[in-house]
Image (cartoon, rainbow, N blue to C red):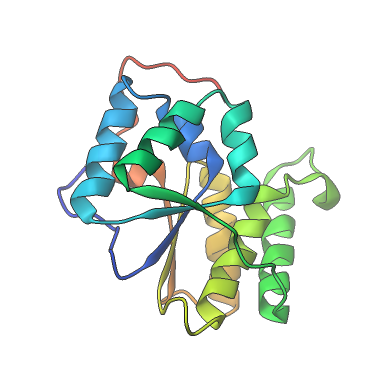
Length: 178
């Protein structure tokens, strides 16, 4: 891991529930490293309200609450995916994930991952929100699928998709099941 961060305060940064589930609650070394990386970058993570319940179900609500209390994350009412390019992005991600998962039918793909592609496009197309969007996930297949969608729609320079492991190393003594 190098010392430069792909995070920027000039970018809207959306974070998936699986990131909080992967870092665990305060006191875990992954949580500490992630918190330190985000704070050092001067970024406020936006957690769409629809994934807050997933964080709670994952048993890591204290991680989100601490992030909110410290000001490096906030739960937001994400826009509804209404632009046709946002919907197209979701469809591309759903198909890409299904093709990488031999046993999954396109309609059985988890809904959250495609939604992040749609939300990224919505934030970008709403000119009052941002010129650059970053999506953080802990799912490498989702990352590849979202990158495929952004590239096919011509957004590769404006929407960046990174995994948690691009920010912190994945090796430590913490064990988190997701």
